[in-house]
Length: 239
Image (tube, rainbow, N blue to C red; front, side):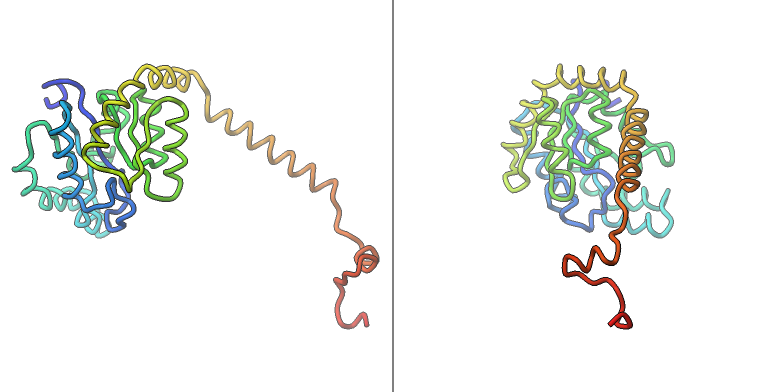
């Protein structure tokens, strides 16, 4: 009902990485801090938002048994915030962002969003590319900077330095990213026509063949050859 109630929303989230790791968060803050940032950004834009986060209590429940316990922990942790949210924000509960337990697949959701604003994880980036939706990426660590640069170089989105993340910069990025909608849709069509799995297998087969051929042409040096260059690979008994 939320999706049908207005213009396509902006998805905001930082994937399924544990919220106990501050570098994994979308804004480097806690869950409610991210919500406050989104609310401030809404005041500077005319967008609606689907917000997805991971609460530390959700992660603890997931480790104890996951499933319904994790979702219940998330609802308990966000219930007070939910009551205060403006109608332009839809809070995605716990495991709803995954296919576990009948959740909402991002592949389905992203196609119905105007923009995907996230942390730059490989899975989220890939899903957004295949959906044909422009992206705003706020990378913090690991390979996320690579994916942010790659998306920007492909003309399918923009990167924001996490140290410069403000409501104003985020609102500007949302507007700017939507200008890349045509490029994002074009790339999604190319990805749909490409057999990526087959190409990856072919590349790996070629690589392993090259390595095997190289090994067959290079033999270990003989003992006397090593001594000729001043090296010794024998034992003390040879003296």
